[in-house]
Length: 105
Image (cartoon, rainbow, N blue to C red; front, side):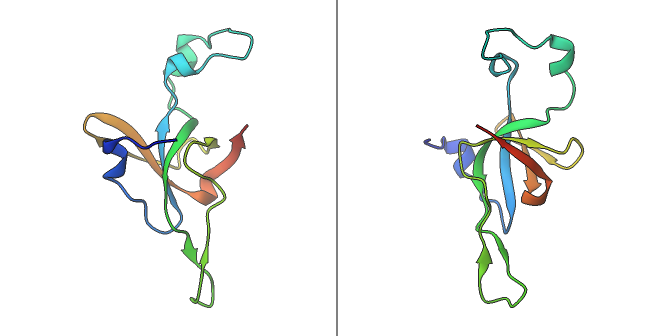
């Protein structure tokens, strides 16, 4: 997946992950059913990974623990964990890998 120029401006540090919330038109089930608008107005709990930090340092400080997610993954994360930022008017979340609950495949 190719990153656009907006997303290339932000490089997460350590085990932080930059996530773009999933838009309403992306919240369609495999059967083609759209999730109701009232659900999508709540703070998103899933998003697409657009940038990943290098990982946090291990306890000895001589190596990094690489994050388990990669750019392009769709992830579920805890509702109140992310920090919200805007890049050129587009909303993104920055969260730590420990706040990611699952990767949706």
